[in-house]
Length: 452
Image (tube, rainbow, N blue to C red):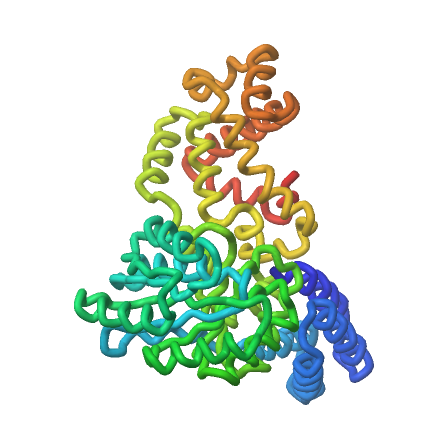
């Protein structure tokens, strides 16, 4: 998300860094670039106007104009305004209420509502150690109830059955009664969506709200709908008191306009971002971290959190001991590293969080890297025999052709993987020596190439 906006804003920032001092003239040029960048990102026009006016007022202030590093001062103004625009701070779910905490999940059809219910269930049980139950009040969409049942099984949440012949309000009431008797901490209620906002939908969701009096009412919206996301969120907010928004499909949204418009238009905080199709692809929304990503500053805190959550620490320590003993880095090790990278959201997710990598990799190249490269590399290694994985040096022409055919790839793909493995093996060998990591980092400074 935000690739286009980041590209435009970092370009503006670079121009300012070369200025000895800021003047009203060069600030106006920069503000024009910021305005165009926001409009291209599909941010709502009233939001753009307000944002640019606020930045202008602060950038023309004495503190910025007389600063020794005016470019940096201007960046700080933009950074602070982005944070303010998106809500100043992370707003967590209210979980301290008397159990069961009822969370009503609403949204348009196709927004990723049911998947978000499963993702939230997993997050609540793993990150907040809550016992979670889910139920579906979507009696209109074929297989909606079965879909939630399947997803609940994947994330370890209790599924409370419902039938398409039942009244949604009766389902919700029965579910609340059930979780109260079973002493569950949280109940997530999936509601029916429509192709667009209509009166019947609003009446039903209002009746559900009145029946269960939820602690949280979350609106799930597709980030790729841009300005429409904020408009539909406002329509729902007029019908029932929303407590927050879940933005989905942010991994497919290069613009990010929804994230910058929703809070300003609805007054409701974005609480979570859906960052992929997997049930683990959900992260809390931190305005200051997102603002840093937008300006190409990376997001080290989120990166560290992701590593702590997804990386198998025991496996990592085992690999470290193996390399330290000089036993080398084989294809089995490489496959494990690639799989862990996939679990962390792929290369795109990692690159966006590393400071200084903004614009390093073109948007289409990053998309290809995520969608094709990692799965292809894993497929190639899976097509090798156990002996070949342990001793990749034995892989010559005949073996390469067999591996390529078995993995549905080309011989040049196998060659590329073998070359990458060799480079990683050399790097691991350097790291294993005393002081090797420090020497390697020093040699890499300013020489980080974009991945091919």
